[in-house]
Length: 170
Image 1 (cartoon, rainbow, N blue to C red):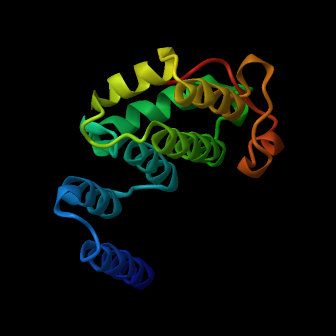
Image 2 (image 1 turned 90 degrees about the horizontal axis):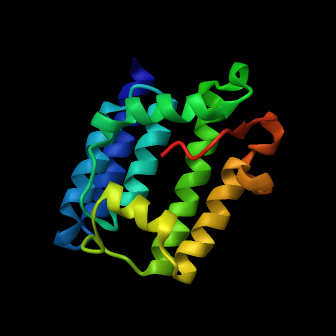
């Protein structure tokens, strides 16, 4: 219990310290981040929340990670093959890889909170857009999931698990 209290105050301190360095337009993102820190139930839940936050900087009305993560975790685990290896630890590796892919896309796209109306729009454009940002995103996404015979990035830890994704879980 003492460890949880220390971690809470450490994370809260980081969030509130960073608050002084942010623009006021980032208030929603900060509130979502603080909410996610306070509501974390497990490491896989935290990984999903990071994934949702990676999309939120480009989305006007972002999904609430507290609301959607249970479904996303279930979907992602359901796509991991072989099924007996769809553990929380493996799921975290996939979420982390997809999160990095989103951040690279956000930079390439130079997006902001007005770029997409919703997380669904953000994901749709990633999958169907024709700009170099979308093409690069699809290549990186396929690598993370070992889709279309791609190999995951060596720093992702996914190759060592001996797993692949059956299809796009999102």
